[in-house]
Image (cartoon, rainbow, N blue to C red; front, side, top):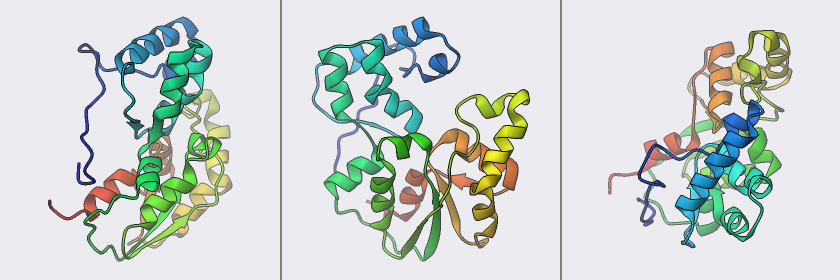
Length: 211
């Protein structure tokens, strides 16, 4: 709203819409398709951008929906689905930022990287005056959806996190901010390092003046 957008939460009037990603991760394709159909129906009939905050969820609208429900409706939705960082980097709204004398170490979610959405996220953060944006050179955090939550996968999950992400987090100064847009990424970072990471939108919200 601070950027001048009229924000309307997506809804079909019933329970919250779901991208179906969790069902796909569990191999429940029919359930995922049903959720995709419900979401597609609720978002049809508009050309407004569909903006999301969770990379794995939003990119499902751009990728898996095309396979689950091939056709013009899915293609149209995929073309207007974007993460908040992509929207802000594209439109470059004049926002009333507070000066932020801090360093943000930013971990890119795997889906952000796969869909070229990480550079726009960094660029959006870079518009905040005084903020030093330091992307973390890292691979997967090790959670990979539900993979890292399973006891049998703990050794592999921790090894992936320790490859590059966690050493960078531990090396960050105590006053610096750790940013990760993926929910499971934030869980992994806090669970294994003790440092709490925040979504980029939280950092932006803190830096916005009251309007």
